Amino acid sequence: MTRILGIDPGLQRTGWGVVTAVGPQLSFVAGGIIATRADLPLATRLHHLHCGLMEIAEAHTPEVAAVEETFVNMNSASSLKLAQARGAMLLSLSLSALPVHAYAANLIKKSVVGTGHAGKDQVEVMVRLLLPGCKALPPDAMDALAVAITHAHHKQS
Image 1 (tube, helix red, strand yellow):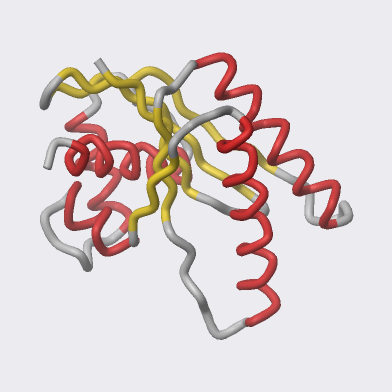
Image 2: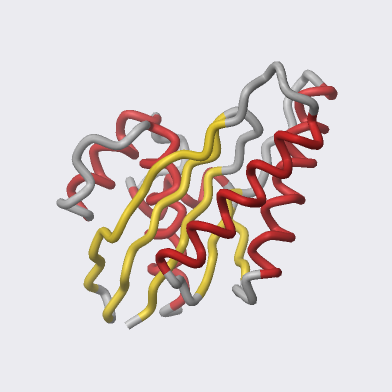
């Protein structure tokens, strides 16, 4: 059995989800978001993300973490802030002694839905089918579960 922590990085809302994998069988453990307030200084928001991930790692004892790779958009300031948030998350996971694997958004969509250009709604539907216990989670948490599912599929190959 492997317990996997999936992360969908974001500065304002970071999704997280934990699944267990026994061979090809997946089970939902927990999921949610770590939210930060935009009116706080960047360093405070990064600290909040760090503390949140440390608490999740301690509470759910994953053996490995999977993180979605960041997407560089046209707004360089937003991309830089997201990269800083992702860096803080990677450090937190490392401090928790978790091996970390990164997956591109298109690979996550292809692994969960079957096509790399699937929409968020399609990903959510498939996550609900693959993990029947994850009913009323926010979209960012569903994306994080998709990252964990992707790792479960790829760790076997």
